[in-house]
Length: 235
Image (cartoon, rainbow, N blue to C red; front, side):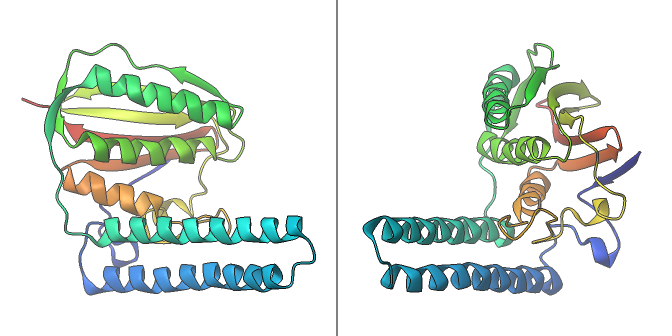
């Protein structure tokens, strides 16, 4: 089993929280490349829209243009989050209440992908004092990644406190992340899922985790992948 987390040390695995010029340059280059892809699609379908021979054809082309615009807006928001100096807004809340929302999200995601979701997290009376919105953003990304894993049929939610922190994990039974890919998963715009995927979700999530004084880690083998978010427990 190979594992990896979001604070690598060598230059090829630069942590998403690093504000070095190399990291920011990689973000800008990736942003321009992705926007060029989106513009190519938008311009192509705009020309088809202008020359559409029927109302239905025009509507179909307009729908694709609208979808491309939404993708561009989403891309901008995610890159801004990766480069932003914004700080989290912590507040105290019950872990169990937060897990209830996460379970609901996981069930809805499993239903959309025709998968099975299993809740393996025991009831908890712990309190957290952190930014719950950022936690939700991180876990949404981890759940979506699990649901899209090759060969997956089931994924689980696990939660375990230990040594002053809590670890919330999403475990899937897919075919795993290849050893040559795993070290690059936090790099901006790195994706193996095709042009329709932005490849910035895990970069943003790792950025959020770093600012919450936590970390994201991945363990993967041919039997599946476990993505874990580790954050401090309120004293």
